[in-house]
Image (cartoon, rainbow, N blue to C red; front, top):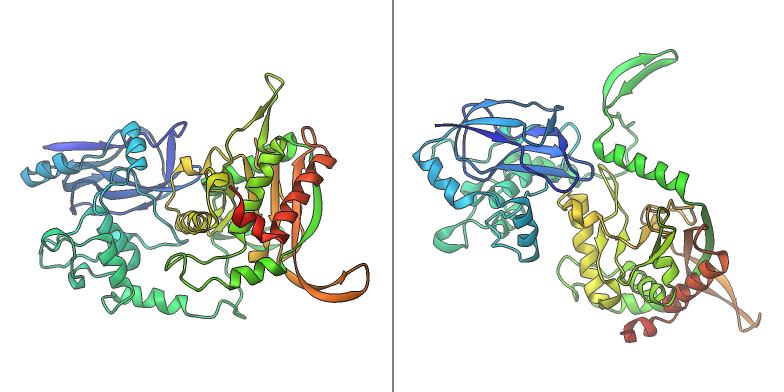
Length: 448
């Protein structure tokens, strides 16, 4: 039986996507719920799973195409085995997927459209198969197979720890750090170990060409970059930006932070300054609700948010994204640290849902991670303020009314705010509160 697989609903207000990669080939047999293409939407690269099992009879799209919801992607020749797989792995409807997200499913099953990272000039994954040529069936679900493709792990060499020897995503990740790597994985690891600094010039992506003055390269703007550009223009032409600059003495905070043993919060969680900053900002926003508000111009109203959802700007290979950490004011420092580690990892791997980028009330950006002290961050519309952190540095500070000078670790802070709604005095009081909490970390630990 021939079945047409069409692009399903991707989410609210998402009508199309650009094909980043085709993951299968004509004549290839696929399992139910196996990823077949990757689409780039406004903020994410989404792997589209096909619920039908069978043989790919015809691929209707190619890399670079714009595909609309409802458009045919593949034609599948189903067989008896494939039809059985459909019943077990059919993807849920969009509303059901959203509900399933609140209650995670077992690792080996996919309950929503998985999202994967992309590298420029990536070779189609279908040509980097980790499946054996002997036709042997490997007991692994779609999630484990997807992670194996990403990490270049040979599933034949992985010992499954699941029921009846089933290979789980955790088994694949463990194998990726051990000897069960394919040559591709070894090459990736070798490249990752190379020094970041290099004297070789960076060749930009795109097609070579020439303008009136010399050679150029032209590259198509990705949807993510176009969305960022549109959002920046909207913010710059709507909000009246004003920026306050100040410093926080985080010497005591740094001593407290360094006193926490490595791995205390979890194997993959580093306790940086950011969790303390998010907590300080969350408490200060409750004391200064105007900076946690938005402006409803159409109805001429100020909308005060009764929740504190903080956007954390993350620099990724595909551009700047701002995933949201929700209800930060109700979280402890360890909980915030784990949440930041999770959203940053998913953002850099482009493994987040579009909904994770929405609903923020205030944003925080960390310029200090790459260098620099002060800047004028652009407000993330419709929010009314954003705080940027610079790189902390040791400075001579006068203490005790000039009686002595001592070195102190100072953190540069840049607060941009919408002057239509927030006055300079209000912004200064808010920033003073943030600084006070950072300079007295005991208050953060005792805050409810």
